[in-house]
Length: 617
Image (cartoon, rainbow, N blue to C red; front, side):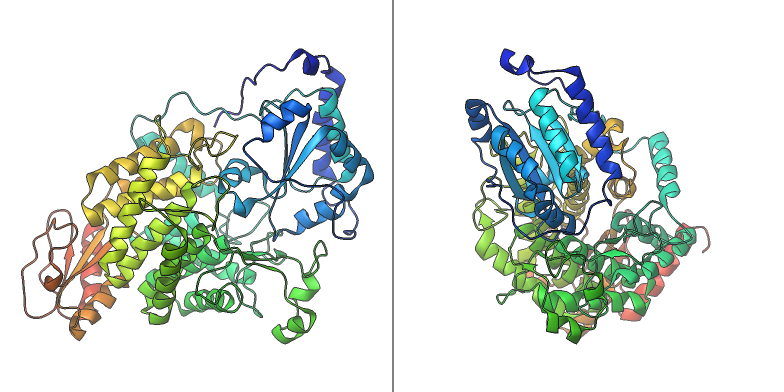
């Protein structure tokens, strides 16, 4: 993505205050903050004398009227360094004084505002953004900013509100003509992906260690297709990632700041619980290693105990700190009983559609790969709660009970994926219909003319919503697979439109992690594995065959159960014979297998197909 913009020209009063020395001061202090990140003392008392306000639609009109700048503090309620910013930086008298004189201070929980979170996520949490009254982004800072550095930045902006070069976002003028990657670009991205893998320690090469979901899923797909070279890194990563699992409470910490995986950040946020659970369940389905199933169940135990509401929906996160702003390493080294004597870190009990969708999909994936009926029922129950409490007419979903803006793409996308996974795990057609409705809502509400889909509806926020990279990858994969289940060709167009944004060189060029692009591209260029069971849903033999088909392969597959009493399949592109006994069929682009009547024969048949495709059969 090109980082540049021509901001609106400031009025003469603002222009007179621009000074070259002040501009240099902003750049120097921003750089200085990088070196002071770990040089601060322990957090002081909780609380701040600043009267923080909410993000609102009239914010910039008010800033113009009062001739003030806007200071946005994007925090996460689970974030240790956000707590430290409140206790140290925003309690400093000098910082408080300049904010009160020249700024409108705005604090936003990033989980509550997916539009702003999508725009500023590259700056981490806390993220500090300073705007001019016309909406121009002047300064953007990543992470903890010490009080002396913050005051210098705030003072310098007052003297000279010129934007720091390179922080403004301009989208490309042209986009990829087709969704598919050209062969040369795909080869370049495969090489780039390969260089990011730490084959010795697992994970990705870099300062942090975490389970990289898309890279691991891409490796699973490679293994599934017979590429054994992907397995050692995948196995090393899955095993090393278990160091981030909490042995006492269960659940997974966000990441480790040391490359040996041994120094975790202790927050437990829903995206990591859901995606790690989903990845471990998929890994168990492909690799059949019981330690991956143990890891999945560890996460489920935590979600059961701490992130499940009485009505079966899912909370958002558990804080990194027992006491806000105080490092909790000693606390998290204790046993379950010892921790409970001291208390429980704060749980954010917000109930968001997006976070619920993530966990519903993960639980339904666990049910698919293991036959865990309890996991499937929990996913159903949460889905029914979201439908009852967060639905928007037309198939979409609100983020919260009441949204100050929105709707947001992330909520409907997460629920659409959850519904599709529920359909595959249960063969209950209601879920497929709801997934299809979610896709239609996304197309109507979020499509961008040039390419891709934006993160929020236009006119719901003073800041223009942008297309978000990861969301467009997820949307391309979801709508493409859904097109195979429904036979709706317009869904394929959605996938291509999303991928045209993602596969534009100016968009993916700055990205270090590109496995998601490779996954989406490979899926759009091939048909999913297709397995169908024919037989009554009251027939135990048919049920056994259905469970066996679910346990084959990873995510990119089409598994269906045709009970003739329900009428034709949603996408009747293959005519199966009507029969009295239960049978399974494995179909490729050109042919289907003979009827398979024993569950154990399904895996054997697929192994023979893979061997033949690889030239070994």
